[in-house]
Image 1 (cartoon, helix red, strand yellow):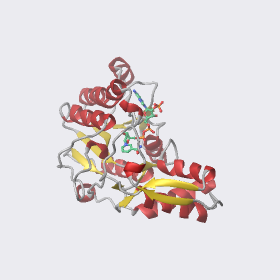
Image 2 (tube, helix red, strand yellow):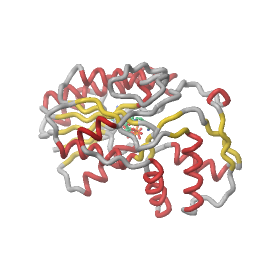
Image 3 (cartoon, rainbow, N blue to C red):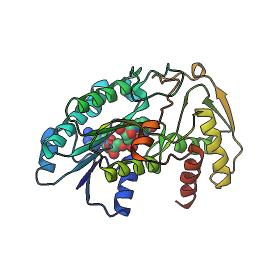
Length: 288
Ligand SMILES: NC(=O)c1ccc[n+]([C@@H]2O[C@H](COP(=O)([O-])OP(=O)(O)OC[C@H]3O[C@@H](n4cnc5c(N)ncnc54)[C@H](OP(=O)(O)O)[C@@H]3O)[C@@H](O)[C@H]2O)c1
């Protein structure tokens, strides 16, 4: 039985969609079984034959994490530790999701799984501690670092842009932070693929869509597709700006580009180009 944690979140809801479609034997929980409460986790799993755990639950408010680091660490570090301990108890394999924000962004090329992490904000620090807690607790883990996630549910850059297209005629978008967007549905497919392959090994993996872009390029494509799909009829100018012109409370890595070679090699996953996935996602918005 698969236990999906965080099924009401952006990624978790896409994973659940696939679990339903593929008629998998699964159970879900979200906030009602708090991953920071070992008693709740034990109580919930006591009578359940869990063989895989997918942890999509997290504290994801990157800016707010600077003001409430204790809560960010409780959910992103202590939570995964608890879940890993349950995984051991149930003899289950654990898939956990992490982030490009474990890196400082100073590297020139694509980040490998073996590169040294050095988070520059609280959220990244809390997620890195969560990774460490898992790798020090269980051997049967798959930690997937992803980036720039968007999907049907929850707040994300695509949704923000679509809202701003209605409100503004000019939008400043940073053009000096580089990475790859990830359609949550594509990541959900990769997660299910890992379960199907059911490898004897474990490890750390990167996953995003294919292609390296900056946020301004991402916003421009969202705008083009929004026009094509009839999601906006307004004329909006997207102005490329430097990070220094757009001060935020939290530092973000300049380079978030992750190498996907390892996951491709180990799981024979076909990576979709970011533009193709974005177009697929935006065509679903027209219908909703
Ligand atoms: N979003 C991104 O751009 C991005 C980028 C890189 C990596 N990631 C990682 O990808 C994963 C999925 O992210 P997402 O954007 O899908 O997250 P999300 O939409 O914020 O969903 C997380 C879910 O976990 C729940 N949750 C929070 N605290 C919990 C707790 N203590 N116990 C049980 N459930 C709890 C949340 O409930 P509430 O909504 O009620 O709090 C929410 O339903 C996370 O690990 C995140 O760090 C995300």
